[in-house]
Image 1: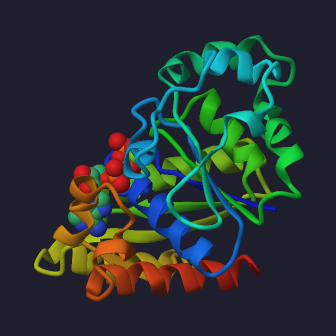
Image 2: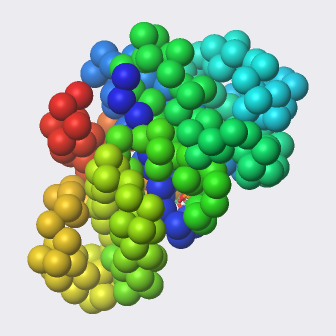
Length: 248
Ligand SMILES: Nc1ncnc2c1ncn2[C@@H]1O[C@H](COP(=O)(O)OP(=O)(O)OP(=O)(O)O)[C@@H](O)[C@H]1O
Ligand SMILES: [Mg+2]
């Protein structure tokens, strides 16, 4: 079982869209896939039409009194399951803080699932917190949707520094450009320049596209209603690239 975090310190960069669409494509390729919606806003749960509530709340779950297995819901798609968000995840930092080795909690919870799933996507909330430290410990790679602006570059550099300072050597960083608008000169400039300095940047870009925005209207992964077009092609290319890079 491989665990991939979809993460950025910044909000609204396309993390959830990435987790939902890549998980769908992974399942379509025959990988047994789980999405863990770790954001209290429950956007991934919303896209999969699953109620965000985890019965009994996340406190019980993180203390290990509830098997993760019981909380997992099937989606409408074969081979694709979801662990829903819970509004009490707002308190997750506090709960984790009380645990022994708090940063390893998430990984420990996921371990028993390793025979059931080939791939887990963690849809992460923005910001650096104890929750994100858990994600960094649990994941083998972070997929980092990055809008091509100077501000995004700054937050990416902050993340690099954090990873470095905390000796998270196991964690492969896989940034890629998201919400790319080729009419914007800053976007074009960043796309040209950034990969020269950061060879870890993936080659695939996700364009800014109304097809992606419509996921909220249809409440489905993109491939279910837009089988053709720039946006789905971009996600398919991104998935192929990630698959190869992580030997999936
Ligand atoms: N490539 C895209 N083109 C156009 N709109 C997009 C694209 N990707 C995401 N969006 C839209 O932008 C908004 C934010 O996307 P998304 O929820 O995936 O970001 P996020 O990083 O998960 O946000 P948050 O930090 O709040 O969790 C959503 O309304 C989504 O529909
Ligand atoms: Mg999100």
